[in-house]
Length: 589
Image (cartoon, rainbow, N blue to C red; front, top):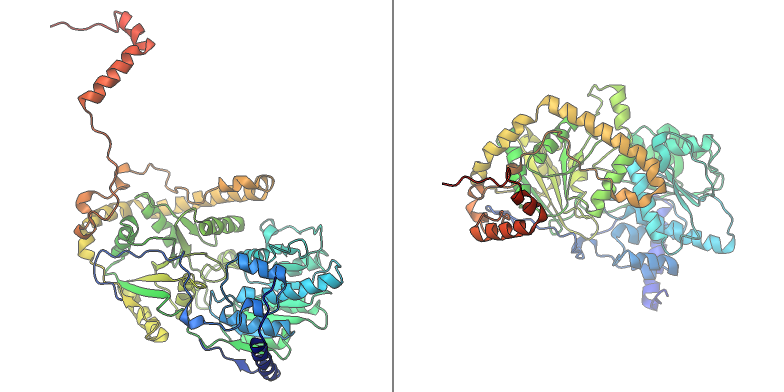
């Protein structure tokens, strides 16, 4: 049952609703108020299981005070959301009043649930009156990965009423480029603008009954060149519908979109920092004298277990992605890679496995900054990277650490990368490797973020791990340009085969999806066994006795040898060999 609200809370909510209603007609803004590491060893432990209530996101309105359906409340309780986030507290009551909303909030603020909850709540009420199969809600997203993420969030919110509302992800079958034959009319459709337009043109989708239009990550949608597709989709919509537009930034393109789809919208612009405060997100940087120091430091952090928990590693190019993976594999540090070259289905499955905790390390290529106007790249390469962004639009769950192996070239890229951790009510850590050529970018980022968000120096004693240098340099010599090229070709072949199995065989055998792994070894040669462990004489003195000891093989001793001899004598094969004079011949002195 839904908890009863007191008269005091009811009066306060009415006053808030009146104030917001007055401001919405004039497009007014609704504002919401919201130790350096000294020496080695440093052990950064994951905090993914601890969800503390942040001081900067204290909300007053509870979910049970919003008058939500009991089935929707049951799903929210199952998700273990203690209370609405700041954007949810302000957006849900306004959406239930039928207002158009233009919201700006940082990554991980709960924007998806902010528009999904009121849509489901109103749709459940309509279903009780007239349960006619119609497509009522259309959600436009910039990428296939985000389409999967939104669909999963809707499925979780509909867990207690899945029989009443049907949700469809149009990007699920987009990898083969074919049309999707709709066996049942979905109530909610999620997809990229191009995919929605293609299905409408093919006659598989009816948009004449749409009551809700959502454009999620609108700035990213426009940056991918979907503006014309959105205009064509809007022409097919009815005269009246409610619109939600969410964006991380407001630009001139957003203003043009606002005039196209929004009518007297309420502007929700949360007064908050670009990243969570230092109480939840700890940021460090370490200066590396050379490129080799980056690889040595990465090896030390992972192999000596100075960083624990799920870790997302960002690089600036696909070549460096494979170089780092091949380097780590030589020390039996296995990780998954994520870039635009991989098939869509493989990328989605790799993200799903990472979120489930099947492996702890993922190397992701941030390609959002590689295709600026001043950069000349082939059209084929741009097409491969379209609709793909790792730093944005992908829901990495319970990430404890973010490592910037290559420092991002813009402050926006840094914010979106680091925003992959410390999401919701969790805390996290971000560590950036900075070479001599990247110091200017570091100083620019520190100036933009301010004192509270400042990246503190990571005081790592490089002299303590100097003994690891020769091992790392030997491993780096094997990572040649030809080895990287062969690894990329082999990875593509493997993932394409896996992608075909996923869309064919694994549709009939969903349990076999668990067998498919995306952290396979790229190097065809055998990994040297002695590189798997760090010799005790190379371990820094401060860490001796802290790291788990390697299990040694049992030494030869006479007692074990005698026992083995007695067991052999009982064996019938031994008796037969003993009777053969050619095999039992002994030299007598």
